[in-house]
Structure formats: C-alpha cells, structure tokens
Image 1: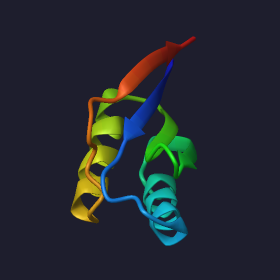
Image 2: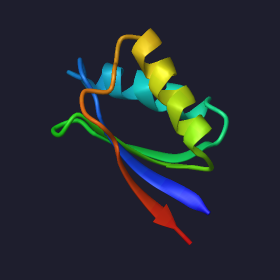
Image 3: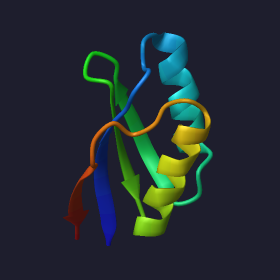
Image 4: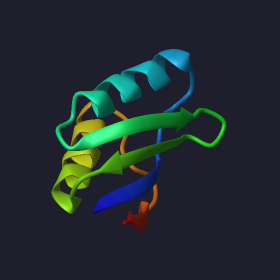
Length: 77
C-alpha cells in the first residue's frame, strides 16, 4: 500500500526553491514521484510509509521549507 501525500510548504518562491525541494524528495528513502506546484506552494509525493513521510517533512524543515499545513493523505491500493 502506498500513501499519496500533498504537502503545503512555506518559503517556496522560485524555480531554484522548487528544484531544491525536488532534490530533497528524490533523495529521501521511501519517497517517489515528487511533483511541485509553485503557484500553490505544494509538493505531491508517493511514499511507502508514515515514517518515510515524517522523514521528508523533517528534511524539508531542515533546509528551510517547513510544512505549513497538515498533509492530505490518500491511501492507494
């Protein structure tokens, strides 16, 4: 079972920010298919577990892009 999560992030203001966020998502174990929408400051990902999602959220906070709101999670079968 995979989790589809949409995260609303803070401090996303340009394409360089988006690329940094995508690099972090791609390098986080258990995270795949990252997509970012600059206009909405959102990152959509697939993840294999809640722990993978928490790891990404912590990593984003460390590099200056904390999650602004709770993430929206949909379980995929």
